[in-house]
Image (cartoon, rainbow, N blue to C red; front, top):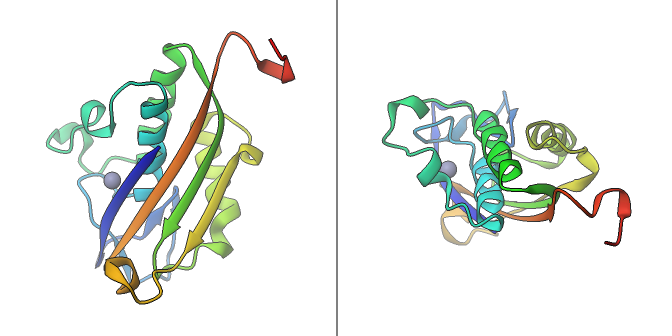
Length: 163
Ligand SMILES: [Zn+2]
């Protein structure tokens, strides 16, 4: 399970799930590109493999990750998980935010995340909901992302093998 939240501020590119929302006047603030959706998936993967969290592998006080492309961080996290003997079974992501609207971009977001994960888009799920005026999400102050990842042993279970 992964959870992340970034403040939405004016003057930042709006990048979520590897997709750039050109028409959105606010974007996630962060040391990296602020892509809360990708960060939640990174933490879900690392957590499922008991490899710690995003801050351990890509610390936000390390200049190496300033302005980092979060899809690149996701690809790196996927490589760590693979090296530990796992493969990605599926990922389910929920975003809570007022804007931008996710639905029109969900297909592109699935493709972008799937590319970084090295899986097909059919195993990457994107859902989005609004804060109904409640809390920082409802006031449009932030984006919150929650992700769940299923990892399968890399050496078995492929192609529906029940073993
Ligand atoms: Zn983050």
